[in-house]
Length: 421
Image 1 (cartoon, rainbow, N blue to C red):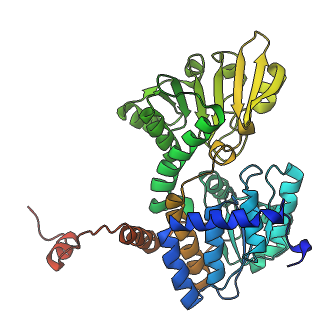
Image 2: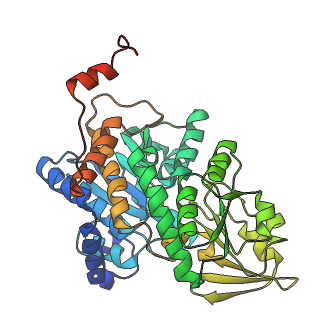
């Protein structure tokens, strides 16, 4: 492979990256099963696949499965701070998979890398935030005719894509892998819950027990974060804009109040909404001295960082991944990981066992898109129910968990309206 075919930090890191990739695969039994199946049947033979994903050891194993299935894969980073440089090096050096990703890359380089991944002229895409698809629609429209379809891994990306579909702008079919039951019920809740707390604890080394811990947003990610913070002994507050989610949070035992009220008493505030400027000037003006701000939504816009910078009289690095902002009245506010995904920037992201199911969905959906006879309509599509069920069955098998099956009589009863009380 020539140097022009990739852009990574240091190829010499590859040895450490291989060890990390192999360790992750130990915790990904479903992906090991798919790797064997894809190697035998080659369902993606000849497919050009571009992925804009977090370049982690788990993503590396997804790429390996797709290559085993016959695909030609190119990867770029979906977040400037989530790239594991040793994994990127291993993919390039040991697995011959082109990668365009450097941890800490500038916004300019980030979009250069997206452009490089699009130079692959993908027939299938994998997105973690819809940047590949949106860039194709905005500046590389000549590529759309070759695109069979794509997948989207995040709530933020699905929101963007559905907005495109409503506006009549979406020209290709995209499958919302994020919405698969085996994805959001497990990845978002258990993966984000554990890894977000892991990132916060690694960055700050602050005891959570007894602290006031506010979670902004009670979607699947917010549910997981709140659950894990409660398990650490924190006094958890949930803030919401949706009445049904707010009611659910209250019934789950959390205190539900407006964010402006929570800001004055919180030791930690974590955003998980996928929206913009959730924590804004009005909140900064009343924040408790020493409050720690973190984001577990996709982009670094949930906390209004430019306003926080403008309000500060002094900014310094207090610890790795911790910036201290001193406000005019002397209050100190601590922002983690520059407002980017704290679980990937300050820790290692989701445990491999969780990504095992999410990436199994990715691989099986790409197989579905590539081998479906009739091209899907240009819209956001759900993961086919049978794929979701198959991933669950595979996972249960690997956990050596058996379940019951309906008898013929039971199945007939459930499918008929004639038999009553």
